[in-house]
Length: 416
Image (cartoon, rainbow, N blue to C red; front, side, top):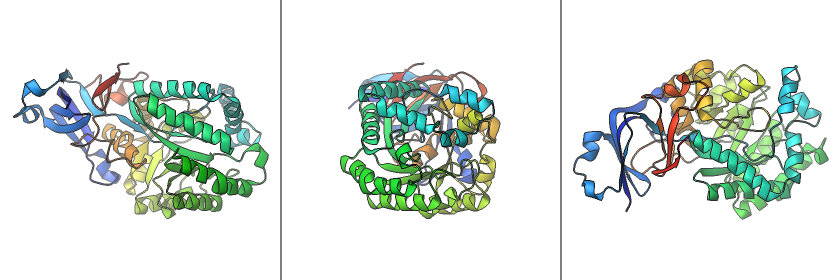
């Protein structure tokens, strides 16, 4: 058995009550000013006041003592929505948007997601792996210890499978826990323009069964939006995915209130993501169904759109998660501290609420809160030491990462 003791830490962690923290409960943290944590074989064995954790502990059985030096200790970030598997960022489209071009107009003209599709289809698998791994390691250095990565820049069976193989390999070759999501329904590919229903048939009849047989993804997502996929098409695809054992998620109500949040509630999705345009009926549906609302403030920042109504959602009893949405077009950042800063300063979340959204509720949005997202006996010892004494430093120290050290299962894996 390997034993480690983290001592002299200002511990702040959400407390898991067996469901996503919603409404006023999102601000509730376990705070231990002079705390310690005993780690056994990569899992938390004890956590609490330093004297209590040390009581009865034979120091000769401890392999390493990590002195936190009074710094803030929080769970590693769980980023539940990313598109890290791509070839190159689309900065020229960023410049176009600055002159007034709309995101959906660029997509309709063959740019946007479809530009990335062309690049991914042509990219050798080894090169795509290297690019994706390097972005994942950058996210790790910024404090992300668990990350979701979507496919969705292939849009044909072979290219989608190539992306999912790359994502699976990143999970094996880096310290991160990686959750793969099949997002074949990211856009209608050029060869199916005007035939979206036929493309949905392809995903149901060919793509989903092959992904399931190979075990390359545990989740299925769809972009429901005007000019992309309709609510009816989303309902059909997600029903097929659930019948094959996939958990489901939805890119919902990003540009128009199409009813994506309502569909997420109807199909008991793990999460509904984006929600910039979601109306009150959809928001209330998420609250009633216990579906996590994953908010992506870096996307609103990049697109210069109004932010999702985070405080309004909290007041209506919704559980909020935060994610980077790191992608080549509308949110090119793998930094969860940046996302937390935006959530606090632009969306009105408290530092405690933002921490819960970036850890525990992110884990619920991936269906893995029994392992990650909070620090308690039996959970993975995934934690960060911050250059500060409270989680407020994540928003206050703007423009840089206040993450001093990143630990995964009790092992130091990054020191930015």
